Length: 151
Image 1 (cartoon, rainbow, N blue to C red):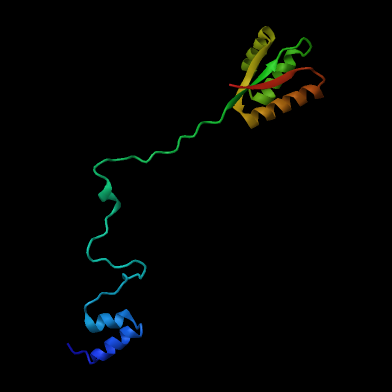
Image 2 (image 1 turned 30 degrees about the vertical axis):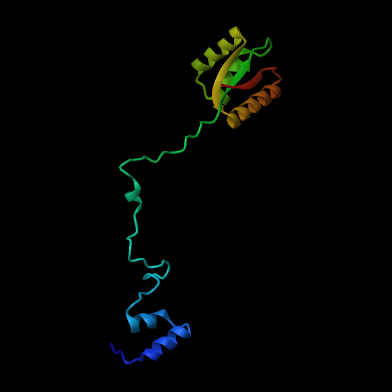
């Protein structure tokens, strides 16, 4: 095989650490040491296995991580002997968006049983509603007390 380059040139290129590409071109015995992109070594003995060849016939469904829902809190009104019933109904309508009929039912429940649930919310919303109702009651000089507890 004569490419116009003597065998001495090949030996000289290899000895001096020259390009493997020159050696490949001249000798034809070796392949380039990298693929077309130049980032992985070339291996002509065994083809690369894809991920589905390792499955062994078992289908596995990817699952979403289970996240527990945040805790919920009941906002409660506590009965007292001094707050007028119509004020309690107003509070229930204004802060808990209850209609007149439902607000009256909750007010009567608070009056007869000592406490009643106004709504169930996340912790931040429940804390906010408790603070708003208690401040509103104090502004109007009523001892109505609003609290919250985890459900």
